[in-house]
Length: 245
Ligand code: 3SL
Image 1 (spheres, rainbow, N blue to C red):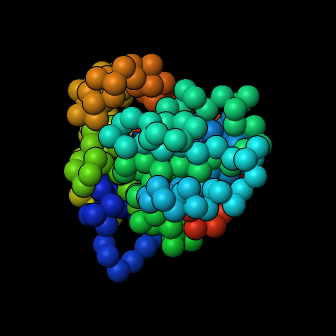
Image 2: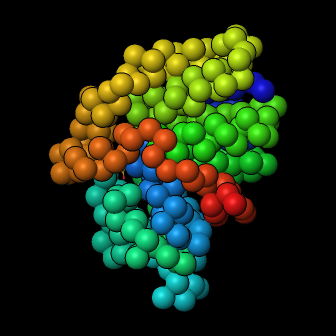
């Protein structure tokens, strides 16, 4: 296994995809996707384009769909939900398809949708992602941060580090054996420095601060809980994620 980390979709090589691509948007798209599937959503379908979301979801029975839209951290008018994982309760999600469009996270998933395996990772489901990698041992793995409008984000980077650090430990290999690019060593260093205070790091992060200004303190707390849920969102068809059985 060779692991490559990219901080944003823009930094990935243009002409290839890996055997396994892992999209990360800890604050908050991949945390929301994992939570929705854990709460019983039938699937989560992602869109970078809101008009397309509205058009495709209109073909779905109203009782079986939920529309979630976020721009700039806030809920998009006309959608049922914004992008808070705390809204993804079993009562609301059970049996529904969640159609979702967010500023950065859904774009990251779309960048790698042609890879043979596509996973969505967050801090809350880190262990489930690692277990999948250990069981399937894909030859090339990308961890792809969503960042914020093309720039680096601390929260996605530390999640990449949490996955990479656990892989090194569990495989019993050296960092040099696993790392496909220099970013891998740097994400592990960030994780080792902040592993006991992930919430503190999220408060420092620029997007964490944006969410705090929108009164999303509880979202940050929720998103910082390592290995909270045993759920693995995996792409079944381009743009459609389901819970790995
Ligand atoms: O950028 C994204 O995709 C979102 O996750 C941002 S937010 O956390 O909903 O503001």
